[in-house]
Length: 497
Image 1: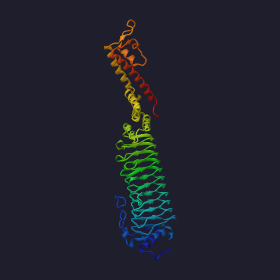
Image 2: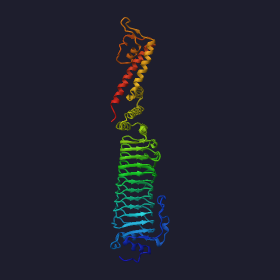
Image 3: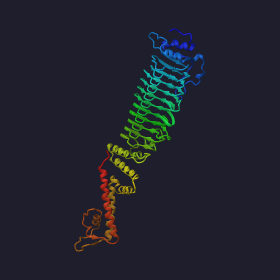
Image 4: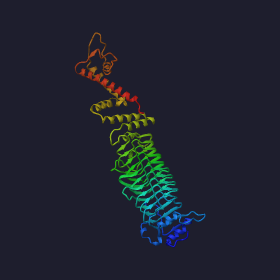
């Protein structure tokens, strides 16, 4: 196709460069490394004149085959430093050529819904929103470094070589979503490093085959969900690394992470039900080492974790662990885990104690397993009625609910010593003086403490006065010790599973 007389000078440059895919530079552009998200995008593009202006319909025409490709070349639309007027919209079309816009200003939102395209790179650009629901990209979509004043919608889209939003600044236009990407499929990684998103990020049902990277990213949606990724499937890694910040809830209910979920940044959401919502999740490794204590409630309820690694210095004040199972625990807080399982805001839950005790047993640490079971029974006691609490306190004091049987020996020895001394000073009278053996205060006290006498002293001597009450007290104490030992033994023999 020949040159159109209706093209402006800037458009004619693009028309001529298209067959060979050369860049068309319409103005100066400099990318500065290390600046805040979206800072490299033009701020005065709406003031650029005709010499830097290209109509969107010219770009659409080229992408849809308005000009034939030259032999032995790869045609593409590549423009730097231009103002794009009108709407860049291709709905359901097949785009056989790359679109690369760098440092450009687009007056209107981009619409590529349902289209099939090659790689699209809109880097360091300014534009008011992007709609690409259901699009298929045989390559990657990059919006890196751009300043987008509207929601990016790519729900149901598929990207063969990744989705790049590194250093991108997005401010959602509906007060709800900055990035809407439910059920998206990304084969080579989703990159939001150093991005700044105001509004929620939706990844419900997404499949991210190359991982999700959020290092140094900022997600702002206070009082709501900053990241909603229920039932997301992530291969390799989901990393919210150093510099990550979320003002709003991080929700990954039912997520499956076939690799590592790493959280090292900060999460603050005290005014939502949960700050970190990880229920019914599966992950091979969960590394929870935020830069500071998470501000809000954290729940791991009913999740299944291979290796859980964390730091007791950053445990949240409110932590729900009911139903959580794990194969391994790592971190500095091995001996502090009992405190870890007591932080449920809804009160006592037995399963976290049982799971922790089972882990200690599998790790060969019987002492800590018994300590955990003892802590569970003490916590349960606070939920019981008066009679249950009194009996529980007695079992605890006498034998530590069976997990401290040596306490019974201490009590028995103490009572035996008291009785031996008292009855040696105040011996009881013999019931049959001519037939009774010599009185032995040690054997007599021992017989009083045992439910079944061993030395035959108790039936042959009768204490008098106040020592009779001591004898009664020793008999009752003996029965209590025996009952407590039997009750405790049943707990000891029933090892945690």
